[in-house]
Image 1 (tube, rainbow, N blue to C red):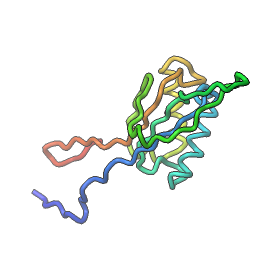
Image 2: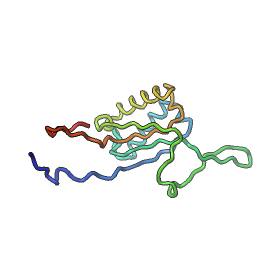
Image 3: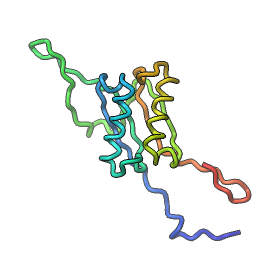
Image 4: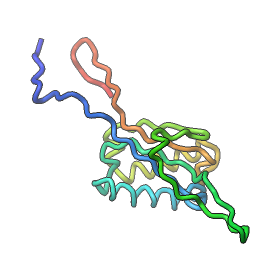
Amino acid sequence: MAKLDPELNPQPLPPRSVRITIPAAVAYNLEAFQNSIASLVERLGCRPCFSGADCTFLHERDWVIDEKLETHALARSFAQEPNPQPWRSATATLPSKVANNLDQIKSVVATIAGKLGCDPCCSGFDILFRQELDFVVNEAGQVRG
């Protein structure tokens, strides 16, 4: 049986979680949602991928109506709420080959939108894109996942 070299098999890094709040105008427009992902991944550090981050997209949900009866999204700090509480959530676990390819991510988003019920939008679901971190090793030592 082969020995594992600790330098080649480091302990897994803790997950990097990113929370993104999007307005309805983006959430309910598939092309805008896909473009927002392209803009985000650039800020995460790598233009063609999620850079190992688990990204949760949440709909804007905190609103203020002022004296003029104008509605505004409420800017808020999430320091007191470290974990987002989704409304209706969907999780997509992405293998690295998909997570590291922006064109495939866009295609996945379009497919998920259709499966959630509406091809041109995400149908009010909060979506968590999670990097695949679960692996299965068979008796021969081959790794799948």
